[in-house]
Length: 322
Image 1 (cartoon, one colour):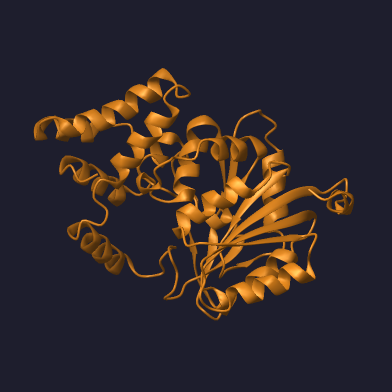
Image 2: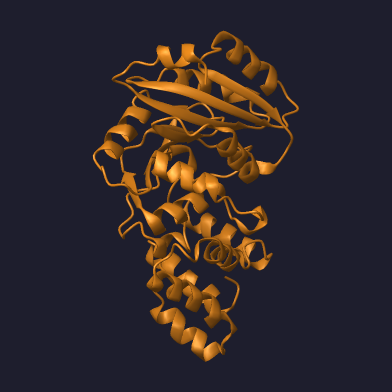
């Protein structure tokens, strides 16, 4: 790190590294970048990795990097996909900051997004992995408000939820140094077994630390046809129709069990005896008779927050499509 950069930071401000992955995002990237640079009460470093864009994204980001040489680091990479790109960003980010945030390319952050996260994280002084995440204000392409998503989860944000559901939006996540370094040092070798980078991080922190959920929306989460992933403003009928179609087409088959198996293999020695037992049972019972699967599904400790989602979870477990 440059000495000039260290001197630039104010002693009384937290140093936050924002990790931004881009891909053909020139249409909205300027609004996103301006909102990052406008964050107040924190010192911001922005590490950007472009994942092989073919539009004007690289040119636009090079302009920002040249105009903010001490604040922005830009890397032009080959196409790895969203999971690989974010994990590569973590590997290329030095573990020298107070906090680490993830960022998408087409949203707009509220000016107090980072200081709000930092303040809540600082309330917990325990020496464990910590992660902050929040609700988002979903907006259309022109930033008109749609709805708030996700809402405050009604049940604990534990490993027993994270194993089967992700309720933490990646672009709202902020990690403390322990969480960042531990995840960074244990990135899975086979990313095809990982559903999404933010889901994996939620799973890790919920298993070994604490997740802090802020029900106050901290970003304008833009919904448009080019979104890679994101929340949905559609009605529940359309949402469940889409889920059913994905299930019938096999797109979501076995993704939970594959990720659970990878997590157990990678972190078995760190998990408590009870955690190991519960994950192993979750995997082993899939090979039992359908009667035993029904029995296990009815009492398993893993859960989703919504009652209907939880019912579907049990159904796909019995059908061995989890």
